[in-house]
Length: 428
Image (cartoon, rainbow, N blue to C red; front, side):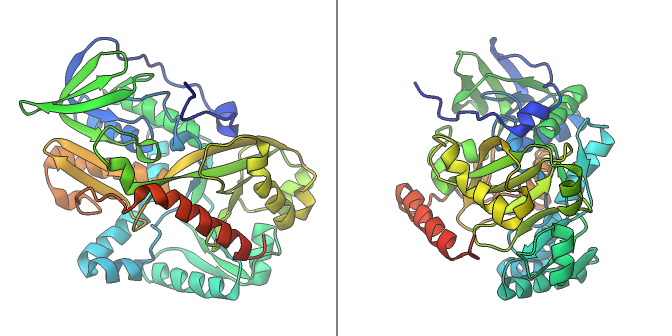
């Protein structure tokens, strides 16, 4: 049977720290809390529970960080898809400001853990630049910068000249800098999160795919593919873009979009000094946004949307290679050495969702492409909720599971929209 989640040789797998020592679950166990999913959300939940004295068990189907947590662009961008004023209009002043504060603190959550646990994770934190590819995009980023500036955030609006200098591309008419952002080696971060969770008292079982969840006499039993079970008072489900059939219709609440990325060979020193020379990370205002950065080895990374199906060959990344040549003409002859992709869980409203469909079962789903910070912070919030029982500590309210209408047709619809955007989104 074909692997439904094939693993392309990624830059991150080639340069990450060694994984922590783990083993499959082969003997049935009883515990307090089972966390399903060894990505940022599950590992952060386990770490923060262990810090509170709990002894969580994490079940991961493959390896720590196998999914989107180890296959993203490594950008740590604070905030959500909505600007602060939009969140207030959507949720009201109190809830909107609370969600704004949560989104605004997600990058701090990541870098704070890296520092606290002295994690072996290459990172930079010199800020995130959002480049505006049109005059309309420039107005958008000006509004965004103004709203965060009112809340005391270090921001700066860039004119065309300054954006060109800091990005190393003349394709942008301006932009803004959010000083809270940065970049990490994402697979190293996932592995170091796991190591920290283990040191705090969590147990992590890899190669242990959960195949069913059932409640009996007030306790939950999670059965794995080996036949071994983990029985617990509570289960936290954190599978995001790799969600399948563990809970009825949960996978129908998201579109699992692939985010495609490429990485060049290390750039020559003169090129390295001309592209993102001050160490920023960047994504832009396109509907099909492009995101790019230099990694700790001096490689240029470029990411964006690709086909919804799993990749068939290098041609599925060809659009990103063309974009590199257009944004950075001097780089077009530098060879591409890595091509990979990872799944992003997109919800109907572009917000993270928390569900509690039965007592003792907490579900987190939806990362929208900002999962490094968002899911790290979400894990902390879920641990606080489990420890206190106070739903007010959660950044979004618990909500019912609502499948997307005609879910099976959504990929076709979104694929058509992507094709339209690609034709009309700034000429790249």
